[in-house]
Image (cartoon, rainbow, N blue to C red; front, side, top):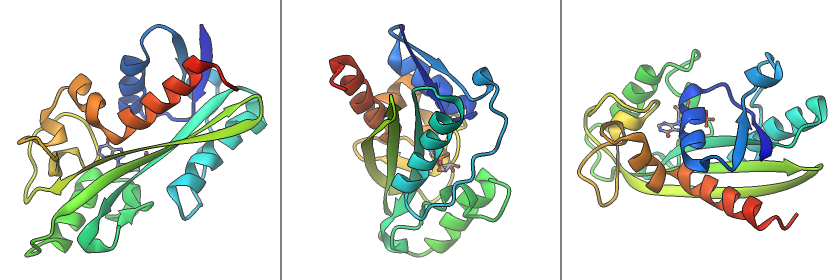
Amino acid sequence: MIELVFATNNQHKLEEIITAVGTKFKILSLDDIGCREDIAETAETLEGNASIKSHYIFDNYGKNCFGDDTGLEVEALDGRPGVYSARYGGPGHDHEKNMDRVLAELNGTDNRKARFRTVISLIIDGKEYQFEGCVSGEIMTERHGDKGFGYDPIFRPNGYHTSFAEMDLEEKNKISHRGKAMAKLLEFLQKGDF
Ligand code: IMP
């Protein structure tokens, strides 16, 4: 079994990934390796932030690991909130405030196109590899559903009538930004070409 640290303490993400990887890999959280520090996300790109997280774990704990960063990119807002998605509504990572700000900024706008983009940075034996996953859709005019997290209640993926927050985790994983980036990561790991 391949052991990999996922540089996150976000329970939703851990669950999503553990569901997706099955039994071939053992995913450890930051908690599992006794890492209690808050890893500062100071880069201005998703690629940069994902890289900061994986390097932090590899450099300090010497373990193979991956980190991810995700942003919601809204076309009419020139790609915002993007790398600032977690704190768009102010400090404190408040999902409700983040959604309120996006909804307010899109008020009266016809173009509601948006996409989630995830970048994963994997470090195996000191070498870094990156994987990207995207899902396109639109920002709904109000919240729908109570599953998932973050902007899920206001994001409807293309080809669906429901928001991400109305979908079961397995269904969301199949089409989501993180699910796609994870699939690329898993394919890479299974090939063992590193
Ligand atoms: P993170 O850097 O991957 O934690 O993502 C930054 C922010 O993007 C989170 O705080 C959420 O607001 C949002 N986000 C990330 N992934 C998702 C998702 O799957 N659904 C909804 N929002 C998400």
